[in-house]
Length: 319
Ligand SMILES: Nc1ncnc2c1ncn2[C@@H]1O[C@H](COP(=O)(O)OP(=O)(O)OP(=O)(O)O)[C@@H](O)[C@H]1O
Ligand SMILES: [Mg+2]
Image (cartoon, rainbow, N blue to C red):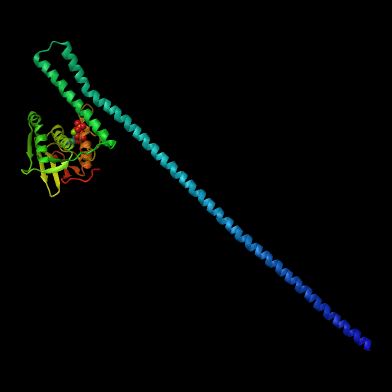
């Protein structure tokens, strides 16, 4: 009985011990499993962040590629635009050369034919005189044309320099206007010059400003078909205003936008006119280089007024 009791008790202990043993075993497995799961989770987290890092690097790389492509496209567009500009400049140069050679040839033709006439024929004194005058007129025109072409090329290449000097503008205007007295008489034109009694002094490039004054008066005589031309000079506190007003045919609104452009010549003037279309373009550049401005007001069949305004004070530095 006792033995049975002992044996029974031992088997219970055994069962309990084996239960504990298995519990311990299971716990061990669970811990291992948990460790393995933790390890795997950590690995997964690590590889996820690595993947994220790689993905963002790939993103950056593709953005950089896109940026490069955009830069390349921009550069391509720039090259295309500058190519177009170069082609336009090349065309302008060709047009300019053919225009200049045509303009230069125009006065040379009558000079040559008059000289041949003078050499080959026995002419009367009046005929000789007429031929020589024609030679002189065309030589003057050639001279002016060459000067204007040189001036415009200096302007275009920004080589035109202004040398400011203390100048009495009143006497400059009177002087320039008087050179047109005989031409005005020939054309039955009334030339009225109004300058203030007091001298108007300004710091300008005397020769260049005289050139502008002469160009504006020359235009009024040559183009306007006016009966009367009024030349005036006024002064405000720090500016002078010079104007040439005619009562001629006027200039349409459309033409007014073009006349200050290089080589623009009035519609009815082309093709064999004595105009090169350089005068107003030169005037505009000279006035602007002095820090002033030039403008026109005109009405068809009523006449035009061309004016320029200049600062009278000494400028520190011209453009
Ligand atoms: N007072 C004016 N009345 C009418 N048209 C004018 C007058 N002044 C200028 N124009 C027009 O403006 C155009 C351009 O004038 P611009 O002085 O530049 O050239 P141009 O006189 O024709 O030639 P250039 O001065 O080189 O001999 C003229 O051809 C003419 O059609
Ligand atoms: Mg002119």
